[in-house]
Length: 241
Image (cartoon, rainbow, N blue to C red; front, side, top):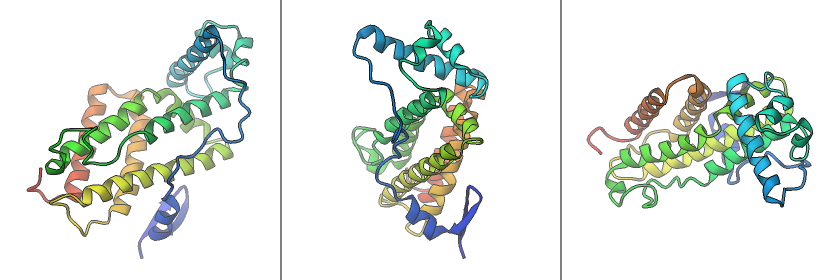
């Protein structure tokens, strides 16, 4: 019987897949009492600087190693200015991760979409796959600091850990939809179990993202290319593309 291990729980793969079919991305800010959005230009600019400062410091020092005072100082604000925009460091992290998910949700996962690549995509699935992965990782790269902080924070925060499970379920489902779309293209192997492949590759993507801040952009590009190569040869016959 086919099983999958997820966060220490063992369940049948079919049960796991049903749980991952999420049409809407997780709303990380549900229930969060955020301060009112700024209306004045200067205040809006301060909020942008706070987010940029947090991304830099989270990536450099991690979650526990970054204080609110340090974020405010890098944004050239008094510590009190931080609380005009966010109630806590945790809330700021949630905002950043929610923005990342919003960006990922806007990526078109249709491998035949002319908006992603050229009109030759149906005859060149390798190009389509690489283009989609490149777009996804370009979204991720802007939030590497948040990803590093998030991976650290979930270890000691049960609520965040539950949200992380929802995030991975959602991204696994979206990865599966991409693979199912690829499987409908000419030359695809119809017998490939794309659900299991999606679970494996999604875990690989998140693991790669977690290491991205410690490797060069060239190394990251090489590993993304390798992932696209693996997926392509798992789904398509060697003579295609």
